[in-house]
Image (cartoon, rainbow, N blue to C red; front, side, top):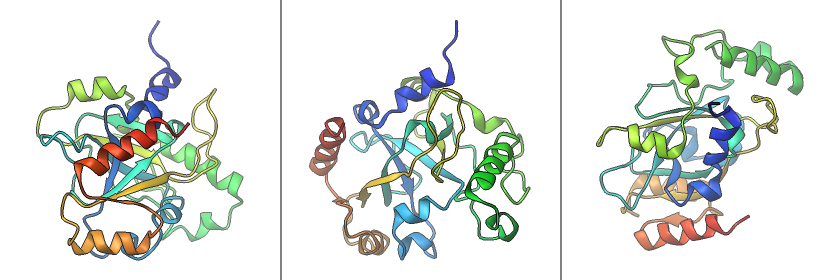
Length: 221
């Protein structure tokens, strides 16, 4: 019998995952709202977030950008895991969603699941050319084994809490920001802006700080 979605997703539990790496959201847009707003609050308003699974101690692998957030993502929030970049339109959210903003939380989240599984966002726009392409689920080890050296993987996760996606698993929860990563350049202006907008989140600059965060995640349950 093949693995169920729950079997695969439990391997993405943050405590287990930290032995291999972290889920990372790179910030490349100098006009991003993340430069001035708390990241956890912002992520909770996004339908889907594009992430990378990275190991910062291995120089051959990186996120799309060196600067960004290290995240603790509940496994039930994960929609798709890909050993290559699927060019997902990031932070699908509600900027243009006036009609659906008036719905109740239950109505809106039910609509979110329905549209995501059909390959659309809440505005009815197709997320990618092939609607079912982003629903692939792989374990972290399988993903790393299939990923081509020097290429980026892409993990898709629901940002909004209280969305029921998988049968037999709890509803989505808020994504937690556990580190702001500088790529080894603490003077980077984007990194400094992210730290200023998230003063309670520890900055991560060195390999020693990466190891310290890894240890904290492995013993935080």
